[in-house]
Length: 409
Image (tube, rainbow, N blue to C red; front, side, top):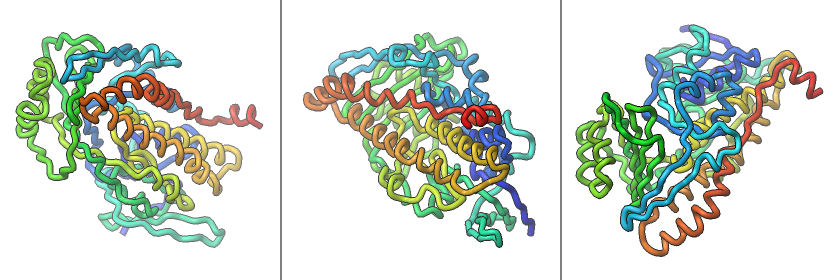
């Protein structure tokens, strides 16, 4: 039986886990990242990164790798499928930072983060089974992790970045995420000769359905459909997914959208329920206990309607690194308080994102009746949407250095 002792263990090598490892490394704290798969996973095709994500990526020193590949999206169009009415949305006008909204390949983001970490920092094929805690003679707590292969890992700090079905979140006592009442189908269309789309976001609103597409480059277009459904029994067969979309979910959408579905790489087609955590669980529950906490989807699974899932995970990493780094640089060691400060800073922010995302989804996918149309176009887009967009300009701060602490003092 192998026994390992480390300062920090991060469970999960997704966006949140890799970003957290980088943030800690930059403040002089080395972490061990545990990943249950045998290699890095990057499911989901693509994701939107708003200005708040780019602030975090700049703090991590990774932004330049992606901004030189992906260009900002200046505008988008929202089409009411029933009436044909089209509404223009200016992303450039909403952006107060100059960083913009960019859609990126999820794999490109994951690989850009992983490249920053030294060899051996990620331990693959490592499945966490259970957690216990122990108090040492000097009254400092440690987390003891029992792995599936019998390995025991002792850590001063444990950060669960292990996704929606987090083992760490369950140990903290957070309730199981719930089905939002909506389901999503995602895919990536590939056109070797070029797709001919302008570099714009297009959304289509129908009765209890919302679809959209966004080009990532001149040959690939990411698309999605969300619709009302509580089903959890969904096929993983790509051809059956394509058939369901073509014959039912997208049958009344423009031919160009159907062409995207037809040209989709089968390996990118996914069909899954949209899950969320009750916001009051974050406000009233335990998102940390002593030296154990969570980040990313392990803390705040939310619907994708504000595009903030990945953005918030990057924020988490920088905020946690900032709080731990400040303590380590001031005291030369881990001391209590850093995790609690991180949890206090993230609790209301992430609860608000869950609520905002859910309301945005309901407003945009509530149907095409007159009353819903009035609420959506006269109230949501003109007033509420502008207010919600302030969310994307959140500044998670910079990671501390010795010089920055001298200035602070």
